[in-house]
Structures are given as structure tokens and as C-alpha cells.
Length: 196
Image (cartoon, rainbow, N blue to C red):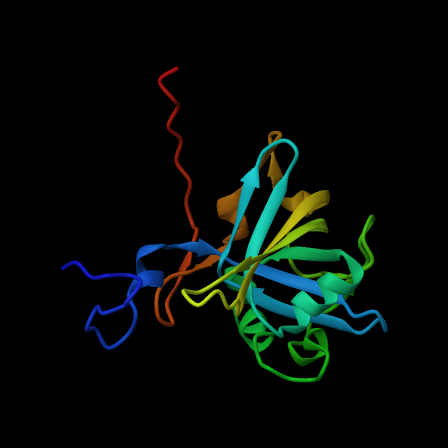
């Protein structure tokens, strides 16, 4: 099949776009409001975009607490969502006024460089400062979606997952979003060297 992605006339019961761009890592973003209230929410439009310096970016809809907090404070943390933390990650996606850390039964750990806490149970976290927020306009020039770009200032890795000088990503069992309500889990790694 082929369909016009602008018209989105695929004729399927559910939009297949996210099932094709998959698996997508999950940015489990923790922030602080200017008043010091913690917020935690998962975002499945996320990835890393530069090796040196390190930049990450995630997509957010307008009016989300995470984006408002980042705009106000200029800081956020991306926590690694793992299979062991899948239920807590899902619980933190609820639209509630409560502290999502408490709602999901998660502990807060202090960061070294930025003010928002990281998820203490997560095996890795990226401490970030805001670089830029880019509006993603629709055909009418209206923006309901935004790309939040952050520079990574500090990285936390649980020492249990460092083996022979390398991070054992598969041992952390990170989860990723696929289409619909489907997820994937990284459980094995394999190597292939570039020809040059």
C-alpha cells in the first residue's frame, strides 16, 4: 500500500506511522517546576543526535507539564526506562496533578549538575540543560507539537552494568515503544564492525 502522509488517508483503523518508526527509545523525563514540584513523564518520540557534544531531543505536545517546567527552569533529566520499571513508567504517564514519582512508587535521587531529581531505581540517567524548543507547525502554521533539544551535561550509570569497560545495555533491558500499545525489550546485543 501507499498513502499520502499529509492527508493521512491510509484507510486503516489506526495510524501505522508509529508502528513503522520503531522501536523508539523512551525518554522518561523528570523535571521540577519553578516552585520545586517534581514531575515525571514518558515520551516515545526521543533519541540522541550528537556524539560530541552530546545532544538529545524529544517531542512533546503543547501544554505538557514537562515542557512548561523545562521552559521555566532550563533543566531536565532523561531516565532510562527498563523492563523492570515498565509498570512504574506506565503509571507515570497518567495525567494527574500529583507527584508522579509518588504515584508510581519511585524514589528520587539527587542529580550532580541539574536540579530535577532522577529516578533512583533507573540504571542510567542523562542530566540535561535546554538548548532549544522548536515548534513543529501543521499545514496551517499552527504548532501543537514541539521538539525539545537538550545538551547532556552529566551522565549517571549504575556500576553494576559496567563490564570490562563497557556499558552492558542488554543487561539493563531498556524498553522501547512500538506502534499502538506495543513495546519492545532489548535483551541481547551483537556486534558488526564498519568496513572502514
